[in-house]
Image (tube, rainbow, N blue to C red; front, side, top):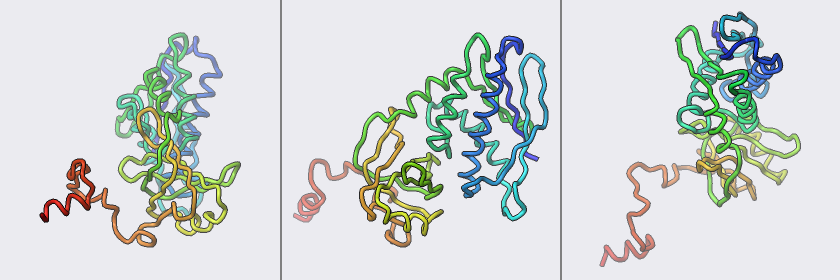
Length: 268
C-alpha cells in the first residue's frame, strides 16, 4: 500500500487552519496531475485516502492510494508518490521543473510553496515511510518556481516526447512529456483539423514544431502549432530519428561554412 506523508513544520498552534487545508488540496491536485501522466488516463487511476493525521511538533498528514476501478491494468500509486517527492527535490535542489507536472500542476506547486513562511509553516516535508525517501520543501522552492512558470522568450523550434492529455476547454491543447526529462510541455493548436490527428496518435512519440515559449531557465513551456504538418509522428511521418539525435554529432563541426561548402572543401 503506497503511503505518502506530508509534514507541515512549525508550531501547530501558530499555523492557520486554512494553511493546512491549502497544503492538503494543493498536494491532492499535484498527485492527480502526476497520476494522469503516469497512468495515461485522463481521469487518473488512483484515489487517495486518509491513513493518519497527528500533531507532534509538526502537523502530519498521511495518505495512501488505491485503484479507482478494477479494469485499471497497473497500479501506479507508488510511482505517483515517488514522483511527488523526487519532483519537489528537483525543484528545491536543482531549480528545474519537476517531471510530469503540467502547467496546472506547476501552478499548484507554486501555491503550495508560497504557503511557507517563518510565522507559520517553516517548511513542508514530503516523505515515503516505506523507503525513507524524503524532501524538505522550503522558500527556496518558491523562489525557484517563480523562474520556471513565466514565459521569458519565444523562438521557432521543436520538442519531442509522448503525446498525452488532450483538452478542448477554452483553448485546444495537448501535452507532450519530453523523453529525457519528463518535462510537460503544453502544445496549443488553433486549427480544428489537427484534432483528429492528435486523437489518433495519443500515447505515441511525436515531434512538435512551432513557436516555442521558454522560461528563464531555457526550458520549453508552451508550443504554438501553426499547421497540421507541425505535428509529426515517429514511425508514421518520421521514419528515422532526427539528425540531432544521432550520437557524436558536433553542431560546430563545419565552423562558419555551410554543410555544402564544407563537403566541397574537403573534396578539393
